[in-house]
Length: 284
Image 1 (cartoon, rainbow, N blue to C red):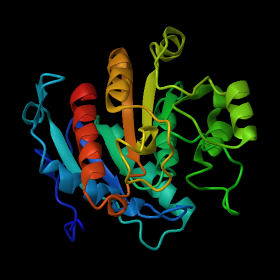
Image 2: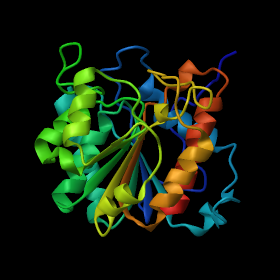
Image 3: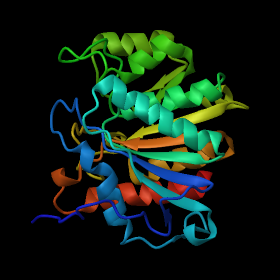
Image 4: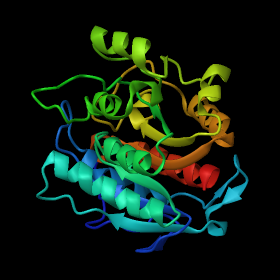
């Protein structure tokens, strides 16, 4: 069975195309360093496609997209750019949205996208912290000869801005050295997706960039990702974590590593689209 995606991105459910709103989606179809199963470039289109099956209303949140100032700015054109230039383009576009007063929700793409978003946030909010949900630590110094990749972006961020502003949750895969680095230097490190009182205290009164790799979910809930890892959280556990974040100041969000073609059923795209809807409703 195959899923036919549209030849060009369609606007996400109930959003205005080509505009900016209080919440603005931005596609970043970057997929240059996928190391196991590529396909994350299809993430933005897959999420938009699957949104057609959603209702605008969330009964869990009792909020409706139709009541939200919600826009879809389309996809960045990253073709022909090398990895540093692509990350810089993501940072510039995210920065423009921040300067306009929007909450950017950036749809990846490989997780290197998050470095561009983080750079934009930190230039405008020097005291910001980054909440990182993922199966993988992404703290390698290099991977397959690349120092700027989906497996190294968090290391680069720590070197640039300080590891203490990086709070990691759900991490269950990585080198021994990555785990040692995370435990010794990151502001918070947890293999579970649970927002403890101690972690929540680190976020108090500070701007927060939320970056979410969809493989933080167990493959039983989302299989269409390049590097699935058993032992992840459930949808309900992730929703509880996001609810606990509700009192914090979220200034930017990215959701990365959906690879729609790797799940021909379309279910992974549906899960990611619902997650995007609920993130917009919860934090917009």
